[in-house]
Image (cartoon, rainbow, N blue to C red; front, side, top):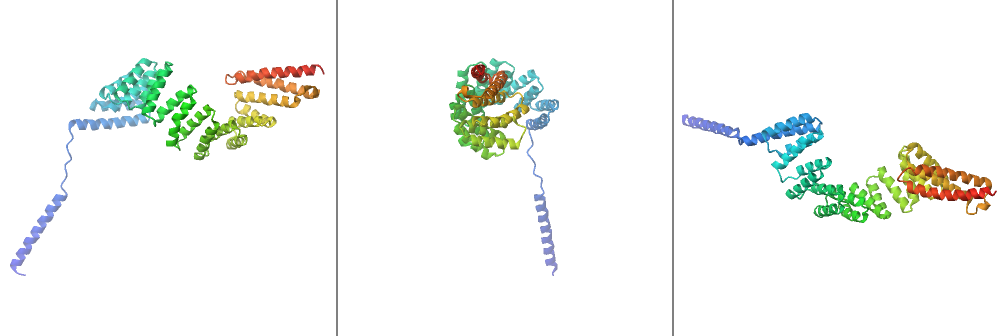
Length: 396
């Protein structure tokens, strides 16, 4: 190799080394991040304290939550969510004055957000400050009419004042605006249920059932509406569908059994109650419902031990007590038949004893407001029947 060639080669080597160094310098150069403004830095710090405060609140440490939320406000005094959470913290600690102040601060810094209006309105309504609550809900709607809970709040005030027509109007506005909002439909249907307007309730729920076919709450509510209308066949269909979605749900099975009874499917009702009893022998209702099926089938002897089981599990079940009155009365009537003159004296005495037992059960049951009318009517009937039995016995 010549001296010239060596010089050229050395020059190329140096050039190559320089290129490599330049390439390395280019690839390892640090990219500078944009510098935060002081306002952005303060906001980030406020977010950190807000997050810490939220964590403490979630764990139940309200004092630490309040301390960190207040620190957040030192860095950003316009932080809406902080005021909102502080209001909730103070409500949790029964400091209504501070809670109200922070809810109002939240409204002041961001008047177009609805949540603070709702929280403040709910608190005022609970405290009995109804007029202020109504004004708060309405003010919230004026700034943001897309919040369904504010409509519910207005309706709640009207219902508290027994202004049902006004509440009805508000609910209808809310339903028209939020036809798929479950909370609105729920409150509306509860309102209709209280007034026994079951057909309107069903009409409101049916579209939801079509849209959310697997949502248990919707089908349960629809089944209740159909039952209220006396359309127990439709209630059965809803409950059967619910049971296919959740076969182990004992509450659904119990309600289905009761619906079967209403449509005369006593065998199906009895099977439902037998399944429930097999699942849990400590629950009184399946025993009582099964006894009522047997009474309807004139199997009073089979019903009696079931009712006595109910007495042990729930001594305060006055419906079961009235049912036992029915058992005694039915047995007395079946003993004597239609012609008392043909009845043996010993049988007549047994029937009189059964009627006296029935009276005792009906008298006990009449102490319960839910059973009083039925028990009182049966007492009057037993007295007439007993009078005829005793008259026949007196001439023997």
